[in-house]
Image (cartoon, rainbow, N blue to C red; front, side, top):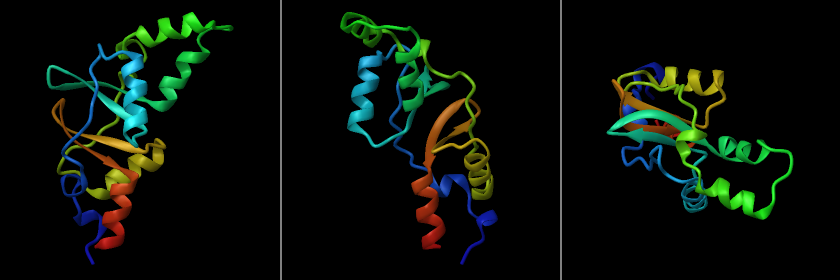
Length: 137
Protein backbone atom coordinates (compact mmCIF):
# COMPACT_ATOMS: atom_id res chain seq x y z
CA UNK A 1 0.00 0.00 0.00
CA UNK A 2 1.37 3.45 -0.98
CA UNK A 3 1.87 6.09 1.67
CA UNK A 4 -0.17 9.28 1.51
CA UNK A 5 3.06 11.25 1.07
CA UNK A 6 3.86 9.24 -2.08
CA UNK A 7 0.54 9.98 -3.79
CA UNK A 8 0.28 13.18 -5.82
CA UNK A 9 -2.63 15.53 -6.44
CA UNK A 10 -2.58 14.86 -10.19
CA UNK A 11 -3.13 11.14 -9.54
CA UNK A 12 -6.35 11.87 -7.67
CA UNK A 13 -7.76 14.97 -9.38
CA UNK A 14 -10.69 15.07 -11.76
CA UNK A 15 -9.44 16.60 -15.00
CA UNK A 16 -12.82 17.42 -16.55
CA UNK A 17 -13.69 20.35 -14.33
CA UNK A 18 -17.07 22.04 -14.48
CA UNK A 19 -16.47 25.72 -13.85
CA UNK A 20 -18.24 29.05 -14.21
CA UNK A 21 -17.13 32.49 -15.36
CA UNK A 22 -17.52 35.80 -13.56
CA UNK A 23 -20.38 36.68 -15.92
CA UNK A 24 -22.33 33.48 -15.21
CA UNK A 25 -25.64 34.56 -13.70
CA UNK A 26 -26.75 33.50 -10.24
CA UNK A 27 -29.70 31.73 -11.93
CA UNK A 28 -27.29 29.72 -14.11
CA UNK A 29 -25.25 28.93 -11.00
CA UNK A 30 -28.39 27.67 -9.23
CA UNK A 31 -29.11 25.42 -12.23
CA UNK A 32 -25.55 24.05 -12.15
CA UNK A 33 -25.83 23.26 -8.43
CA UNK A 34 -29.03 21.35 -9.18
CA UNK A 35 -27.47 19.49 -12.13
CA UNK A 36 -24.14 18.55 -10.52
CA UNK A 37 -23.43 17.12 -7.10
CA UNK A 38 -20.80 19.76 -6.35
CA UNK A 39 -20.44 22.00 -3.34
CA UNK A 40 -18.52 24.68 -5.24
CA UNK A 41 -17.39 25.74 -8.68
CA UNK A 42 -14.11 27.36 -9.66
CA UNK A 43 -14.56 30.71 -11.41
CA UNK A 44 -12.38 30.91 -14.52
CA UNK A 45 -11.69 33.85 -16.81
CA UNK A 46 -9.42 33.65 -19.86
CA UNK A 47 -8.20 30.23 -18.73
CA UNK A 48 -7.14 31.40 -15.28
CA UNK A 49 -8.82 30.77 -11.94
CA UNK A 50 -10.04 34.08 -10.51
CA UNK A 51 -12.27 32.86 -7.69
CA UNK A 52 -14.51 30.17 -6.30
CA UNK A 53 -18.22 30.15 -5.51
CA UNK A 54 -19.86 27.67 -3.15
CA UNK A 55 -23.38 26.76 -2.13
CA UNK A 56 -22.77 28.77 1.03
CA UNK A 57 -21.81 31.84 -1.05
CA UNK A 58 -25.02 31.29 -3.05
CA UNK A 59 -27.12 31.15 0.12
CA UNK A 60 -25.48 34.29 1.52
CA UNK A 61 -26.99 36.24 -1.39
CA UNK A 62 -30.40 35.83 0.21
CA UNK A 63 -29.31 37.30 3.54
CA UNK A 64 -28.03 40.55 2.09
CA UNK A 65 -31.29 42.42 2.76
CA UNK A 66 -33.84 42.24 5.52
CA UNK A 67 -36.93 41.52 3.41
CA UNK A 68 -37.09 40.34 -0.16
CA UNK A 69 -40.09 40.29 -2.44
CA UNK A 70 -40.40 37.73 -5.21
CA UNK A 71 -39.28 40.36 -7.75
CA UNK A 72 -36.17 41.04 -5.63
CA UNK A 73 -35.21 37.36 -5.93
CA UNK A 74 -35.50 37.51 -9.71
CA UNK A 75 -33.23 40.57 -9.72
CA UNK A 76 -30.70 38.63 -7.64
CA UNK A 77 -30.86 35.72 -10.08
CA UNK A 78 -29.83 38.13 -12.86
CA UNK A 79 -26.71 39.18 -10.93
CA UNK A 80 -23.33 37.79 -11.98
CA UNK A 81 -21.21 35.28 -10.06
CA UNK A 82 -18.35 37.81 -10.11
CA UNK A 83 -20.19 39.77 -7.44
CA UNK A 84 -20.58 36.86 -5.01
CA UNK A 85 -17.50 34.72 -5.61
CA UNK A 86 -14.57 34.58 -3.21
CA UNK A 87 -11.39 35.83 -4.83
CA UNK A 88 -9.04 34.20 -2.34
CA UNK A 89 -8.74 30.64 -3.60
CA UNK A 90 -7.00 27.91 -1.63
CA UNK A 91 -5.50 25.50 -4.15
CA UNK A 92 -2.80 22.91 -4.68
CA UNK A 93 -0.44 22.12 -7.54
CA UNK A 94 -0.41 18.84 -9.49
CA UNK A 95 2.80 17.59 -7.88
CA UNK A 96 1.70 18.35 -4.29
CA UNK A 97 1.31 15.32 -2.05
CA UNK A 98 -2.06 13.90 -1.15
CA UNK A 99 -1.11 14.63 2.46
CA UNK A 100 -1.03 18.37 1.63
CA UNK A 101 -4.43 18.06 -0.07
CA UNK A 102 -5.91 16.39 3.02
CA UNK A 103 -4.26 18.89 5.37
CA UNK A 104 -5.80 21.82 3.43
CA UNK A 105 -9.21 20.14 3.34
CA UNK A 106 -9.12 19.62 7.10
CA UNK A 107 -7.57 22.97 8.06
CA UNK A 108 -9.88 25.06 5.88
CA UNK A 109 -12.94 22.74 6.00
CA UNK A 110 -12.97 22.35 2.21
CA UNK A 111 -15.09 19.83 0.34
CA UNK A 112 -13.12 20.30 -2.85
CA UNK A 113 -9.83 21.84 -3.83
CA UNK A 114 -8.80 23.28 -7.21
CA UNK A 115 -5.55 22.04 -8.72
CA UNK A 116 -3.65 24.78 -10.56
CA UNK A 117 -0.45 25.24 -12.54
CA UNK A 118 0.42 28.88 -12.00
CA UNK A 119 -3.06 30.35 -12.20
CA UNK A 120 -4.37 27.87 -14.80
CA UNK A 121 -7.03 25.45 -13.53
CA UNK A 122 -6.01 21.87 -14.43
CA UNK A 123 -8.20 19.80 -12.10
CA UNK A 124 -10.22 19.54 -8.93
CA UNK A 125 -10.11 17.12 -6.01
CA UNK A 126 -13.12 16.34 -3.83
CA UNK A 127 -13.24 14.64 -0.46
CA UNK A 128 -14.85 11.70 -2.25
CA UNK A 129 -11.87 11.47 -4.66
CA UNK A 130 -9.45 11.43 -1.72
CA UNK A 131 -11.42 8.79 0.18
CA UNK A 132 -11.63 6.56 -2.90
CA UNK A 133 -7.87 6.66 -3.47
CA UNK A 134 -6.97 6.19 0.18
CA UNK A 135 -9.23 3.19 0.51
CA UNK A 136 -8.23 1.58 -2.80
CA UNK A 137 -4.45 1.86 -2.54
